[in-house]
Amino acid sequence: MSIKDNILYFDKQLKNTPCRLVAVSKTHPVEVIKEAYDAGHRIFGENKVQELVDKYALLPHDIAWHLIGHLQTNKVKYIAEFIDTIESVDSLKLLKEINKRAEMVNRTLPINCLLQISIADEETKFGMSYEEAVALLQSEDYRNMSYIRITGVMGIATNTEDEGKLRQEFRYLRECFHNLKETFFFANDDFREISMGMTSDWKLALEEGSTMIRVGSGIFGSRNYDK
Ligand SMILES: *Cc1c(COP(=O)(O)O)cnc(C)c1O
Image 1: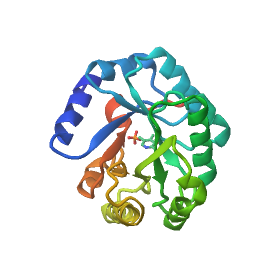
Image 2: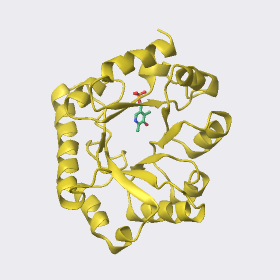
Image 3: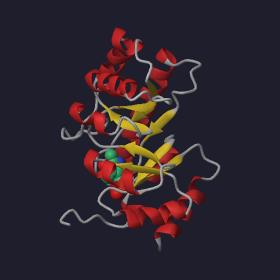
Image 4: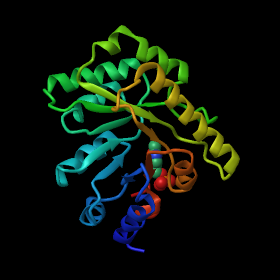
């Protein structure tokens, strides 16, 4: 199947659902991203700042770029001007820097941020505990931020084929979302995203309430990291 076919396939699968597709284009060249763009797709995800900055410069500017990988505080400045959503906010310190840099470049729209919650048991995966997310939202610092908007939560499930385990992790993230929604975002429509599900598990994630699936190889084919 061509990239265009893949985009149309996901359009069809997600039609009449509240879920949207983030096409994860990391490691793939801009020509390939352009194919998805020409098929009508506008939301793309990258996990490395430098790669994202390079691609941003070469592609149409109506793309909504999502940063989905761990973000170091000292790199926020490179993307503050154009990033649509940072899905991987995992500390108050990082959120403060995002807010500061967005203010410095005079953003007209706030930067959308998702709180990354660790839901897998692999320790290598970044993310906050639910309690850390609560502490962040209770902080004085957060209340004073006007250049960011927290639009939901994100999680990366364990890399496993165990459907029961995956469902359990997705359900946990959904539960975190609902608890945070009730406590901090009641009647605030900005907080509405549950970003979960990738190529191997997006169908399960969708069934468990995902509003944003992040699919890479399922659209662009396998990644070659040696290039
Ligand atoms: C690479 C990546 C994806 C996409 O992975 P695929 O298995 O290729 O769909 C999704 N989310 C994050 C955070 C990633 O780093």
